[in-house]
Image (cartoon, rainbow over all chains, first blue to last red; front, side):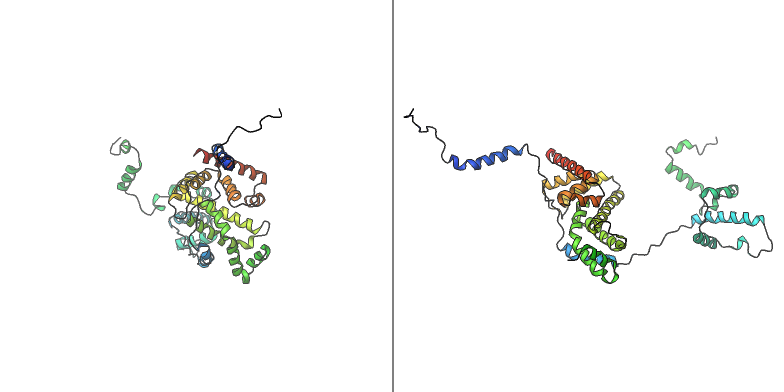
Length: 175
Length: 180
């Protein structure tokens, strides 16, 4: 045993140990990449125009100082006809109970605009149902609510455009 | 450096308001911009929302009672402004929220203010698939690096809830990036 030859008969390629660490790390990196969880990038790719932040305060100030354009509310008069009719009916009912012929001002003296102005400033205070209960609808004509009366031609055109099967209406039939 | 309390006091005083507002804008403009930009994605929209946010802060500063930090309050306004902006936009072009998100991400490819590569574009696609709140939480935690306590104050959600949402969001994004 004493004379046992200790000389290693195995050999390694040239530079094996010098490059071992590097090769090992490369292998770890590559072999692990398939199983590794994907990294979420920290950079998003968004950019801003040059000097955007420099001018921001100025832009906000300008916007802040800009006077807001006055909004003119569009008020179609049509709905006031109904209100006026309602008012007329209510006032007539009230006046009808204690009708005094000596009264100097009658309902006819009131202009529609006065009535509209009154309700604009004071509010009607009645629901649609309450108005419906007070106003007799038998005396109302369609012309009380709409400005332009529909003629037959317009009606036919409307129905033609809006009814699926226009022919089925049998408009020309005498039945 | 002004303390937050001093800044708020100055914003409420007419004589110091203008100067204090400039300080406020300069202090928070970038943080709020990026917060908004991550929600609306497009620069011009982000600019609009950011300006409106500051204008709202300016006009409502008297209503700020100091129950939360000024920073949290402003973040909350910015978040609400951004979300309502997107809702209005969706309504205007007649699409749903999900469809709008897809459109916004799709627009990034031709956006001159987006220089992201394929991975970054894919990341935006992944974020767009998240529910609204998860998206906010993910952005605030991952990119803006806010603390859970801060996010909790801004979004009025418990820290536990935030952690769960963030965890879910990260998981979904990783799955999305892996699948694609």
